[in-house]
Image: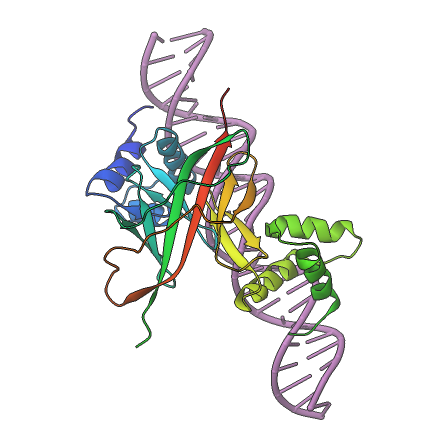
Length: 122
Length: 122
DNA sequence: CTGTGTGCAAACTCTTTGCATAAGT
DNA sequence: ACTTATGCAAAGAGTTTGCACACAG
């Protein structure tokens, strides 16, 4: 994987300042505000390559939105319905006990949990 | 919500024979095999209306696939990576303990957990 | 006749792919 | 040169929306 101009720029945005949760579109807009022109296709391809390399994690949210999380370690998320924001839910607190009867011949690859939040009605 | 021909047909496919997990596209193909022609748009609109009515539940899977589950009660899912199949994970076994520090002003709307499975390497 | 609700075609957005170009050996 | 990898334009899916039509009151 070669360190091209496009990848350096995207890497900078993704990893330059702590953990982030971006959609491909957010990243595309952001990169093109800085004057550098990078096509949507390249943004997608790069995100998928980073995913394959294990540097980034893809998260599916109800409704078909796709986020990429720059923190690939095991943790879960909050999602704020209506604001389209994804937050890390770290620390303990969300415990997932062992699974019951897995279908035969299969093993667990990963557990993704998303806690949907809504603004409290007051 | 009027019981039109289109809705009756879709309802029959969705609820006629136990719980199902369908993508809009699956449902569209299925309905059009039976000779009845229903447009994609109508399939989407109907699924969203059923979701709003609480009869069906939308589930987001990593990678942007969207499933609709005809069982709207609280339960979680297995997803088989590479086969694009979504299965109910019912019974006890997956326990989610109380959340830590929710962001202030928000409350939990729902918890969606997806256990990703892969075929065991033998 | 009027108002409300429906289904679909067309528009739009999101994502993937094929290919011309570039970089490395 | 030849091979492998890259970025992007264009194609392809997937999803939403605006509007003509239908039905009920």
